Length: 200
Image (cartoon, rainbow, N blue to C red; front, side):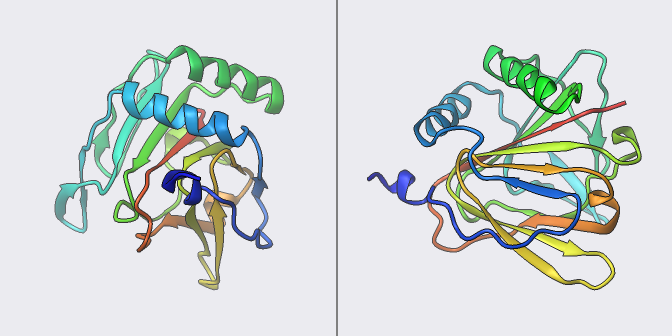
């Protein structure tokens, strides 16, 4: 088993709060790793800077924003540049529409190159996403610890997201909770995360 394969093994699934549904096998193991390699080498990756608490710095990961031409979206003071839908992701989008009845028109892709790349605590609660957004997240590559935190009690749940697994966030998930992907020592391989969303 290769090093990448070893770092893609699933972990234990905890009980999740309302609005979060874990889908352990959306794509088969080998297919998910093949898609990881394909996206890593074909997408137009960028590393934009954002301003938080008055400080501007590059985000600790690479990013690609794929969306319909009419979509305008940004966060933390940064406007994202649209990239056209690649065929493989357009097909995935169509499948998700059939599965969930959701017309996703945008896809934010993050590439965490190793355990030093991360995402801080946040909610996907931008006005462009609507009152109760539905967001579908697909993980490819190394298993990473996804954190969910109750905004009131600060209670935290850790969900290992392995390659090919999905996470559906609906209802009040963005109102009542924050989520993050912290740095993770010992992870030497990359993880690509696709988050399908509806903007506007």
